[in-house]
Image 1 (spheres, helix red, strand yellow):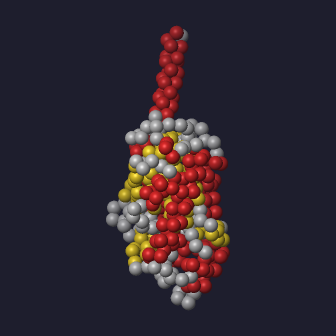
Image 2 (cartoon, rainbow, N blue to C red):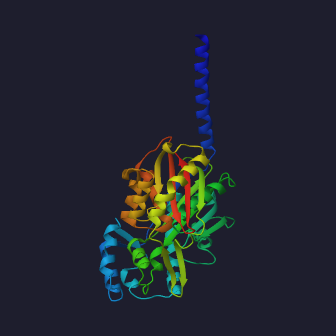
Length: 374
């Protein structure tokens, strides 16, 4: 009997020690301190945009009435754009659109960053690095240089601009922020993602891809503070995947009038085919069971993409509730959207000892995953 009691006590102590080790490892991981978000002034209902697209494309697209139902099927109610609708009715040069990008993107980035700093009670002197993510405008020096000065950060703040990751940029940026946080003890890393997708609209592009893009894309910015100190969800790891010879699935074509959207209609089927295996490999890398994941923070690229996430991973729709809500109320803001979803999840729930997975797909064709734990 004594041996049984001793062995039981020994097993219990191992379980406790293992739990304490997990807690300690989590404490030594980068933490998400706070998230801030911002959108432009012009809020437009989906029906308004549908009527606008119908009016300007009807004389050039014979089958426009067959395409217009994509607006209702998108599950989007409201989107925020950088300019009023009448601005998009005229053709604009790449230079003109890019100048507007510089102005509006800087304004939204500053607003989102200040909100995150206020929520975390982080002062300018506390930030040691800024990571700036975008794919919808080109500015050199990159906007993080101006943002550092707007926010009053140190002139010695490290800078890492990331361009071209598209919808995967928010998750990838968070992964880079978590890795670089280790090199800045006592400091915060500020991740800023800003996308003004509407400014890439091509007035004289009558392709189906352009019309589909017009039915979902929107503008916004998000800022995330990551640090080795403080409280908040811990970032435990990240996992990136590049699909070979898949460059044509998603991206931009650079034309005289700017950035012309390119994406394949097969993206939902690609999600269904490959995502289960990708998630399983990520879980193996992180040494966790997929069943232990309690929260799914996915990029709401569109209604069909969210359905593909749900189907391929056997998730109930309420497990993607925040993603559907962000899609409905903001549309697809490329790299920014998944950070809005994370903010919404953190506002609506109080997870404890729960894993969460962040997922997004982007040009490459690529997949980005980040593991967090509350």
